[in-house]
Amino acid sequence: IQKVTKLNTGAIMPHIGLGTWKSQPGKVEHAVETALKNGYRHIDTATAYDNEKQVGEGIKASGVSRSEIFLTTKLNNNDHKDVLGALNKSLGLLGTEYVDLYLLHWPAPMTNDWKADKSLNWHDTWKKIEKVYREHPEKVKAIGVSNVSAAYLKDLLALPDVIVPAVNQVERHPSCLEEEVLAACEKAGIVITAYSPLGSDQSPLLKNDVVLRLAEKYNITPANVLVSFQVNTPNVNVLPKSVTPERIIGNLKVVDLTEEEIAELKGIDKANHFRACPPTWTGWGNLGFTD
Ligand code: A2P
Image (cartoon, rainbow, N blue to C red; front, top):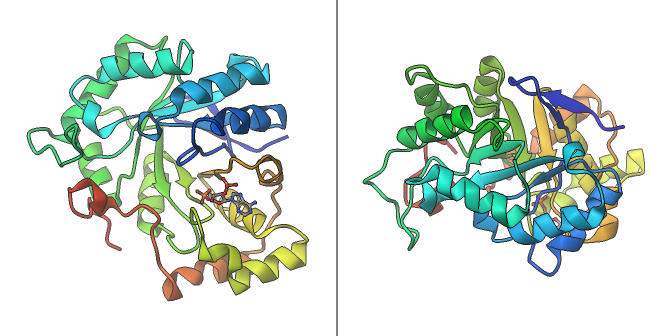
């Protein structure tokens, strides 16, 4: 039985979900099917990943009932003008009536040729997301944000009559701790979901000495150490990504790390800080992130 988190909507979100960033059509269908057939009940996708259709096919192929699955997708950066239209398109591709969570993917409106769209303000986008949530509860069960720094979150929470996001999905692993964002979200009752928990492709974390030592101690894989690191942190959910069946299944194994071991893993950030997905790619600068 997997641990779960309760969102500020009252909904239950399983602690570990399957990440699908970079999971290609042709592989992702089987990844999603394998995950669901082997105990996952939480799948994360996004319009930007260009795989919503195939994620939907994997869900169908698994035979697991939709009501048992926590499904997240995200508003793309070039869809800030028409939130309801974008959501409807996602639902059509996913082949589902609703998503459990709809996230603002980046607080960074962009044009169709992927330049910062300075004619738009992401605070207005959030208000449009709130409106869709209020008017279409049958389509969206909870709303949240992604890639929102502590500074940006402060501004968001100061908006008039704001609906507090249920989740903030950010990159997090021992080389990107996001302590400031974590503290701000916990205070506001917002669950953190960690993406790229292994450090994404070709990650040095899978060869890190501390990670390898703990893997040996607990007789688990380095990936299990990194997923356990998140699950052992209060208020944090985690999305390990894989398209490899044995890894998908294996990644669900978690252990209880000691406080000393968590502290040791946290020490990695000081010596080797990196982001798999730096916010500057959006053309909007560092989006309030300080490292
Ligand atoms: P693949 O999808 O080919 O199996 P992250 O979750 O941080 O985004 O990391 C995803 C990357 O880590 C992918 O390259 C994925 O490869 C790889 N990966 C996923 N699970 C494991 C594992 N248990 N051991 C080693 N690499 C893994």
